[in-house]
Length: 93
Image 1: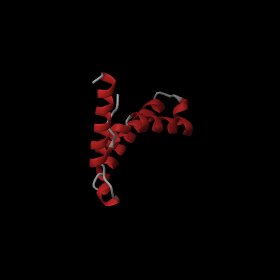
Image 2: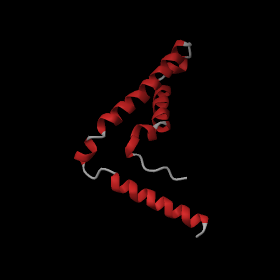
Image 3: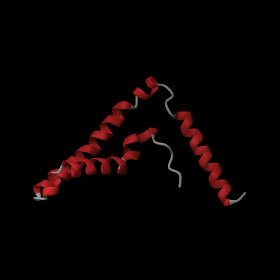
Image 4: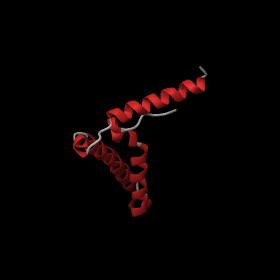
């Protein structure tokens, strides 16, 4: 079996396992909510700390709504796998 075929087989297996453990109903998903909420709060607090630090340094751009929005979005997308925790799909290389 070639290397490429083996990798595809492993990807399919990982996705199938993830589909099996993923919550199927809203009620099953509710038990993950506190963890997701706390992780999101932690990431957003780090973003706020960065914005406050930049504002304290005197960077006028840090007071701009659009800059703050970009910082929040960047932090969210950079730490999305951390935020989603056990609900995140497997990382496929």
